[in-house]
Image (cartoon, rainbow, N blue to C red; front, top):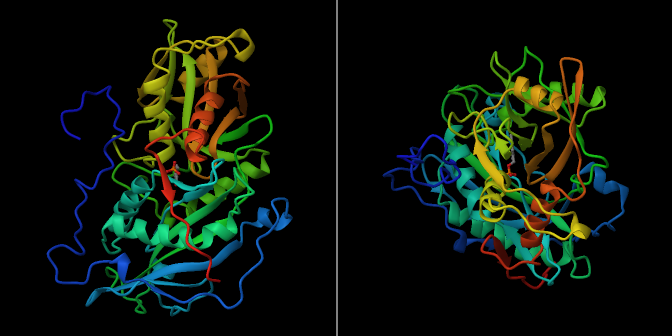
Length: 416
Ligand SMILES: *Cc1c(COP(=O)(O)O)cnc(C)c1O
């Protein structure tokens, strides 16, 4: 967006304007066309695990089918296919295996309390998928066509894998793009494969007592100006797993990534990070890192939190004492803040709450941040802002509140 005041939020920057599809521009290559999809249904349908099946924790259960579509530099997009979920073969020389030419998305399919299947703002994920794909030299596509393919998979596998008698459940959707070029030469990919699958995932937002974050070490950064922190590419993840492992070892749940000599707070592993504090002049403020220099990921959950809080919390909340009492108006700010500011706020008793926000972790309250051997405690409130916001978002996702952000998937008869 142009002409934006410094303090204004940047939440609408994720539009297809400004995305230049260099790889498919002005070409006569075939565009991705969802309506030409072909179907081959599985002959060995799987069993849907019970909600308490321990196998769910392993996150390796997928539904019966996947959608795929191949792209080549010479022909463009081929016919998309819906087919049984299963392995595919690529050459050991494939670009993705050597040069991390990969990007992905993370979405969820929700079984609503009203019986309907919904996606949450899936158009934003598909646009971001395009941004990521172009950043890593993978092909361009019309995000709406990718959305249609994802919806088709959800429409076919959703009814069986999210039965109507399990309202409040979800599947995790993983759209992926990889370069499959079977040549080791270092060049922009000449072949690519889009695929999407549905995974049975554990709930990750019910961390008892709140998430514990470990601030990143001085000698590790996740992203840097001019880099690709804003893109959802595998290349951002592999190198961060070492730090994630250290967090686990130190009894923490996720890394909080800091940046720069002044220890700017950016985001947590796979979720954006929010702090609610009292400012020195007594205002209650919701603060999160900005998108401006493309260090952090433009999270759909982040954006939704900012939009909802502006709409519903800028004027505070009137509640009965029995419901937790009134909440002060929130000032909503996107700017960098530093660990010293967090420490100072903690020392002065000004920290109100903190939470991570992302599709996988949803809204997860944070109970502590460990930085330089100091554990900074953060209040975890039962009736605070975080759970109120979480409740609103959940209400939209699971159809308790009718809202534009809920995208209803029309279910198809299971053919498997
Ligand atoms: C996916 C992701 C998020 C969360 O984005 P959502 O769109 O809200 O799911 C945040 N940070 C990083 C680094 C991510 O990869």
